Image: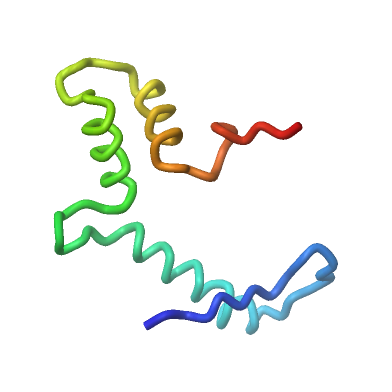
Length: 91
């Protein structure tokens, strides 16, 4: 069951009705939030947890101690995380 990715606003949008916001934007957010919040039956992990495990195995970090900030940087680098400042260098 895929929802259409119909966004109601762009750079030139002046206003959006409350009804359109709830019935379109909020549904897209809720669907994405559910995907991130419910563990998979396949392995019991949520997508964010799966990224951490993937990075730890790929970098052989299963027995080493490291700071959370270092692990977060590694996860962002290895899993093509597209939010925040990691890996977003503009010229």
